[in-house]
Image 1 (cartoon, helix red, strand yellow):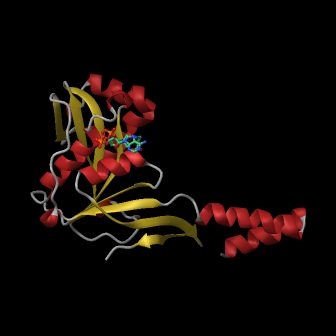
Image 2: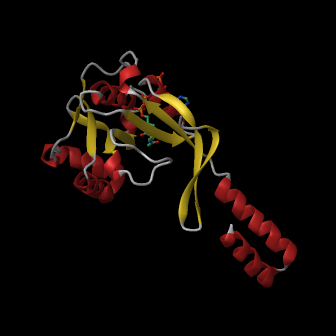
Amino acid sequence: MFHSLWLLRRKVREIGFHPALAYTAKMICRKFFRPGDVIFALRPYEWEASPPRCPPSFSVCPLNSLAHLSEGDRQILRDYGGDKMVESFTTQFARGATPWVGRIQEQLAGVCWLVPASISSDYFFPLLEGDAVISSCFTIPRHRGKGVFSRILYQIAKSSSKRGLRRIFINCKTWNAPSMRGILKAGFKEIGVANRVRIARRNITIWQRGELK
Ligand SMILES: CC(C)(COP(=O)(O)OP(=O)(O)OC[C@H]1O[C@@H](n2cnc3c(N)ncnc32)[C@H](O)[C@@H]1OP(=O)(O)O)[C@@H](O)C(=O)NCCC(=O)NCCS
């Protein structure tokens, strides 16, 4: 709010009152009315889903050590997201997140990261002990539409009570239809749509619809 007023005053001096008003309104709209995120939750004790279809040669498992990433896997990651993608594996793993890797005929086809609440300090709402967030998911483009993403999520959900998880959250942009479809197929339930905005150096969640109950 203060930042918006400050922006308006500065612009009035620069370009005059009416153009400045239009400019500031546009900035505020951009900030507040960006496409929101659909947030989904899964509570293992009430989770129900049938296994999403996937190729016969598909397998999925969590990586407990990055030594399990072969040179072939690293090359696939590099081809998809450059060296940054490979580096992000090391950084996220060092933080305590676990990559769940889906493979088709032993080749890396998709990844979803399971991030415990203890290291997800800035989510849409405060997380509790036993919560986890699934983030940074992707399927290698040539394998999309085969069920890779939804099947990885399904396997995470299936193992979640054994891992002592109470709630798992995942979010995606409102325009991301394949992601939403995959999340729902794995048995997650929508809890709402929200925006994250930064006001006075704080991240604030504005719910457009629903909210965590
Ligand atoms: C989102 C993403 C992970 C989905 O991976 P995927 O392995 O192709 O997903 P799945 O095959 O499990 O499911 C996708 C579903 O969306 C459907 N779909 C694909 N494009 C669609 C579209 N434009 N509109 C509606 N549904 C669509 C597919 O048909 C499939 O549903 P079906 O099995 O009922 O036919 C993949 O597209 C991706 O990597 N995108 C870029 C990164 C990204 O957006 N990540 C999102 C993280 S939350």
